[in-house]
Length: 148
Image (tube, rainbow, N blue to C red; front, side):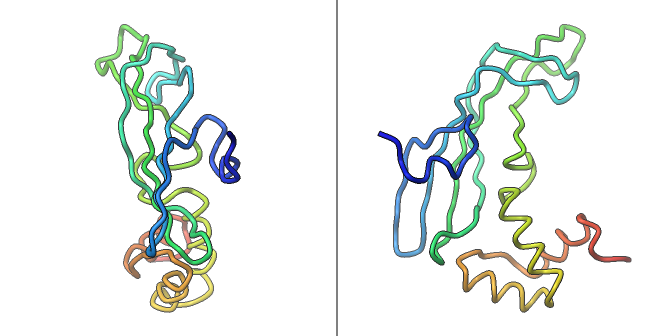
């Protein structure tokens, strides 16, 4: 049975569990990809190794926070000349080092460029997205919105 929220996540992920509480939602999503490209050598691999869990916050739903527990696949790199043998699949949905999905990050930046970081924190908290002013400032710096 297909859920109404299945279309909210990329096609190569499926929802394996969801929990709703007064504070928000937790969605467990798992990669169903059959291959991935190594980020170091750009060689495609189909040799699955295991999963790795990543947690990320996403856009809120009706003012409630959303936490994603993402199971991303690890693959063996087929390049024999490479020192590292394993890599984690990458997606445009979330940056490998981010605690927010790309769409949530973009939304927060849209608000943060128009108001002070403290005001943005309050607006986002009202919408169910919790973030600190320092994090918003760092995101703006990385995005090029603040000059030194």
